[in-house]
Image (spheres, one colour):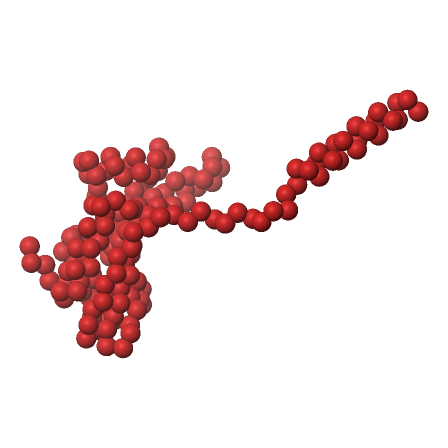
Length: 165
């Protein structure tokens, strides 16, 4: 009887500790990454003409272009100098490869005008673990240079895709 009482007390304490560690609180909401979107509206145009204007603006900057029905994605693969160093610091992953700056334009036709929502982010490949292959990751860019580049593309698209430089 002397041995069963301490054993029983030890098991009871263990169960209480385990029950105390379980949580029934609310699950934490996922962290929302900050972004700095841009918006523009092009009057008296169709969605296809607005897409052509954006593609023309991206082409003038020698960006890679991909499109879907209501989206245009422009990517800059060649990053050099100080900008490359800043982006690598921002990514903060020594195993990251294929780093590119991507500007995504989402188009929405509203009657005789097209509204454009734009966002700029860095996209790269990074391994998740030793055994898995690399996976695509993204992080929104909120710096002034990225926002100004995105705004310039939007303005050029609103002018009909023509560059005046």
